[in-house]
Length: 150
Image (cartoon, rainbow, N blue to C red; front, side):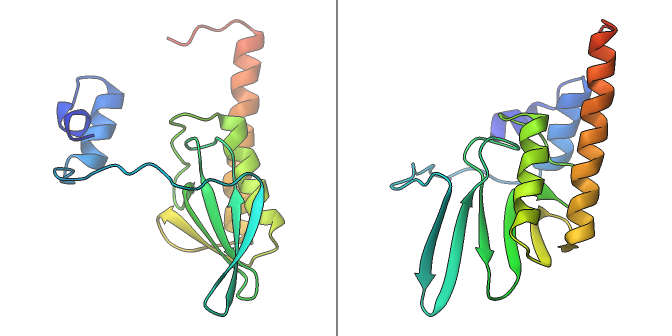
């Protein structure tokens, strides 16, 4: 990640990565593989608090998991949700990001904590979902007309 962030290539992607990640120091970070995984949903108790873990499948990245506190009406979405911008699609798909937004809304929660940006309410998550759906539809129209990417 350090090499990627500091590469600052001449293209738009390189500039984006440098702008958003170059100020982080990843030296000494050890990546630890998960010791347990989930599929679908799983409820656990943390002390006296009921927590629902939700597998969001591949959207922003493979393995996105949201943490829902049903009694509080709050979802911690991590990088599966960005406020003020759409999430980057690293290893999933645009349709996966749209599906993840809908899954978050399906919890019935009223407050969403994104991985980046300010807190969101239901309408904020719906706006992101709907914006991504518009991008997907526009892209599909270009593809049907065989419009080249560049």
